[in-house]
Image 1 (cartoon, rainbow, N blue to C red):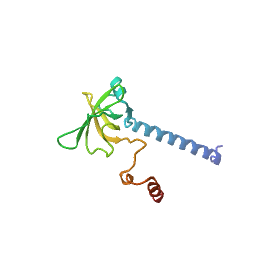
Image 2 (tube, helix red, strand yellow; image 1 turned 120 degrees about the horizontal axis):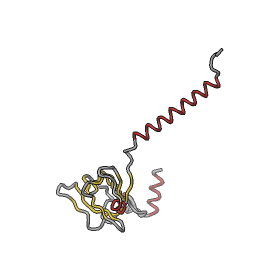
Image 3 (cartoon, rainbow, N blue to C red; image 1 turned 180 degrees about the vertical axis):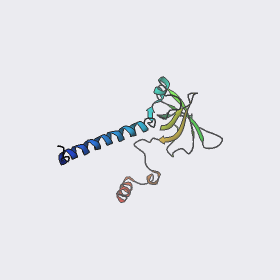
Image 4 (cartoon, rainbow, N blue to C red; image 1 turned 90 degrees about the horizontal axis):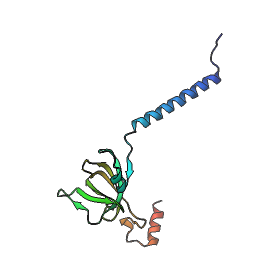
Length: 152
């Protein structure tokens, strides 16, 4: 004689179904995003063990002094990103961030071309701890503190 399922068993079954659904959703999301991850490489890592051609990666390093060149179209930049041991040529077409300049840190998002050039889709300029927004450049420290307090 089997009667209706007890409330305790119904809750257990619902909890198990919910856990299975969440596990399935997590696995499905991980599978869908498996090729969307963007790995971070230093120039030495790209020189020693380059990623496969066309794979989305990030390249981080310093823009070498004297390497920044603008194309004739005014929006194409070519420069070299280096670290202490290796150098990687980079090409970027677009508007560079205000803080982007020779001798500064950069993270370039893009992919390696078959000839070894890094084709950047996006540039992220890094600044040092002494960075001050241009709106606050001419302020004294006291004025800057007051301005920061006003914006909170």
